[in-house]
Image 1 (cartoon, rainbow, N blue to C red):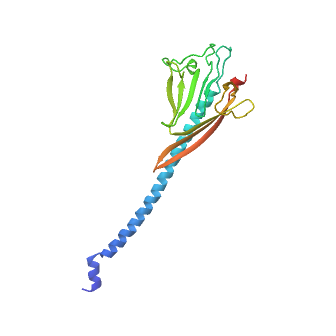
Image 2: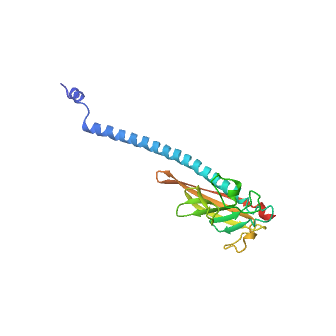
Image 3: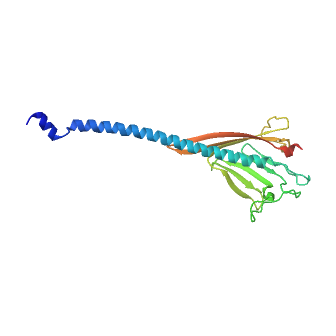
Length: 208
């Protein structure tokens, strides 16, 4: 039997096996890297879409409610902005047009009269944007508007578009509010998707 014939019958040598294993490892590593990159990209896209949806929804709620501040058709409800800071705002509006500001009563669901004193506030400890109906009354009701909130900044402007500095001594001067909301949501692989949206709200009822 020749040496070549013996080698063919004995199979692969250790060196050949090591070379094959190294090639397979490199191939698997490349495949995993491509898969991981695609998974991260897909996850980031999904979370980005979710974050943008939360931003639009949250700002939409705030805009719709703040725009109603000061609604007082009969001039008897003393409606307006009650508190204004960089991370919170409380305001009233006679939304059911009964001439008074009513406390929320959610026993029959949410009605117009339940939305006459509203607070929006950012809690940095829980990273949440909160909405409170009838804050400061026995019927106050808190609910989460958005999670994973990294920052909320509120700025207030007078009728001439001039920025009002804190603390605002005369809340009656406020005519518009600029809302800047930032959400930072985990997207896996120790990553986060961070997006900020800004909305300016003109409070038409306070200009009457």
